[in-house]
Length: 444
View (cartoon, rainbow, N blue to C red):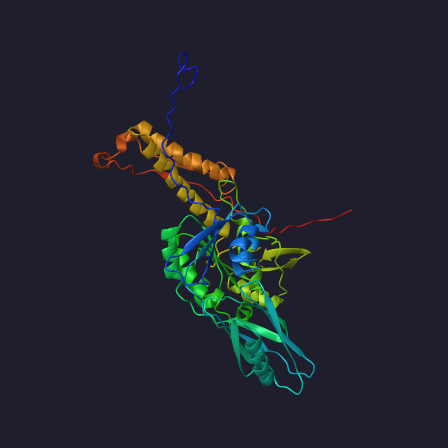
C-alpha cells in the first residue's frame, strides 16, 4: 500500500504473458563423449565456467574458448552432451622413408594433455615406419591404439567416448577420418525434448558419416549446422563430404575445411556471425577468426573446395579470412546448396518472429474482432516486423508490402471458422556486396 492511495490509485494491466522467443543467436555445441540415458545441456557465459565444469583444455573447454575468443563474442554458449559415444578411427599416411627423416604426430587428449610420438628413419621403408610408429603410439598413449598397413597408420580410440585430436607434425599426410556415426540424429531428436532453444549447431566429431547424419537432421529440424572437416580427401578429387552435401542441396549446412580440428574453427566462425537478427546481421564472408590458424592451400586445392561449396580459412592480402575463390559465390559464407548463410538465417528469423508477433497479438487481445479493424491490426503487425528486417539490412529499404483482404470479401465460412486467409507480404532481400568489378581510365 502506498501513502498516496487516498489521493491516487493506479492499476496497471500487463499486455499478457509474452510468448517464448526462439534464440536465433544461440549456439549449441553437441558432444558425444559419455553414455547418458538422456541428453544434458549446460549454458556457459565464459570459458572459465567450462574449464571448471569440464577441465582445462578438455574438448568442451577448447570449443567454448574458441567461441568466446571472437569479437564480437556471444553472450552465452550452450553445450549438449548427447549421451552416445564415438568410436573414432582415422588414417594417416607416411610420406617418405629417407634416412634421418623424422615422422611425428601429436595426440591431444580429452583431459587437456597432449603427447607427441616420433620415429626417425634409418634403413626404413614407409611400411616399416608406419608399423613402428603405430607400435610407439599404442605403447605410449593411454587412450588410443594404432596399427600399420603399408604406409598407412590407422588410429582408434581405446575407450569409446574419449575424443582425441591429431596434429600431423612431419612426414605425415592424408588425414582421413573414417569414424562411423553412432546415432547423432536419434540423440539430437532426444535433445529437443530437453532444450530446443538454440539455432546454430556444431558437433565435436566431423567425419563424413557424422556430418551426413547431422546435416540431414538439421534440414528437417530448422536449425543451422556448420560442419568443420579436416579430411585431406576434400582437397583432392577423392573428397566426397562436400560433394555429397551439394548433391543433397542442403540449405541448412555450411561446410568449413580446416586442418586443425582441436582449434574448433567451425565454432569460432559461427560464434563470430550468429547474431540474433533482432540486433543485426553479418554476411559470414571474410570473417577473421581469433585464435584459429590459417591453412595454406594451393590453387588446385582451393578449386576442389570451391567445387564442393566448401569454405576455407586462409590469408588474403595480409588478412586472415574465411573465404571462397569461386566466381559464382565470391567471398565465402554459403551453405551447401549455394545459398548465402545470412539469407537462410534471416529468412528463418523473419518467419519465426512474424509467427510470434501475430500469435501474441491474437492471444493477448482477449478477442481480436473479425472486422476490418482486426484484419488491419494483423497487417500492421506483420509490416512492423518486416520494417525491422529493412532496418537491420536484411530486407531492401522500403521494399516491404503487406496486404489483407477487405472484410466485405471474406467468406462466411472463414468467419465462422475464425480463420483469416489472404494476408500476403512481399519484400526484396538487401543482399551484400562481396565482389566488385570496376574500370579506371587515366589520362593527361
